[in-house]
Image (cartoon, rainbow, N blue to C red; front, side, top):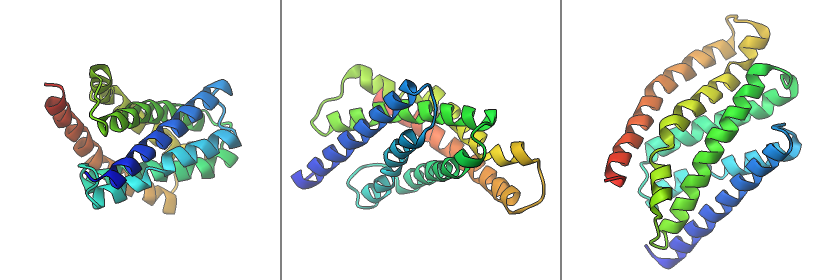
Length: 197
């Protein structure tokens, strides 16, 4: 890897790590309240992941483009819904629970991932961090998807189920999750077998 790309990726991973760390610290410090500052931090931390699709397309990283895009797009979609729903459904248990779950599932995953990627660029892969990267997903991926669905289902819990555009959207989304979640989960298990030999 040439130096400019290496140092760009190092800066990207470090900045993403810092935003996730600051977000989690602020979110916990505020009593798990998604106030406007915490929401801004979450938007930046998660929004930066869009660049990972470009990194994969340019072959700057070894990540598969399709699975990277699927994961990033699903999280950005949930992020958009959080931004939309936080105003109207802030008191609903289902939304608040979903936000807490995704905040921790995404945050812990990304703190481990970005720190490992940063160190790997400089040929450092601490055994504990490597184990965390390829073991935490076992619980955090299903947990994160559960939190995402709590957020996605918020309007149905609040307003009831009816035949409308959002219900059709949820059905299509459920089909895409039913396909992509097992694909991503199996991919991570395969990576675990390779990395933790």
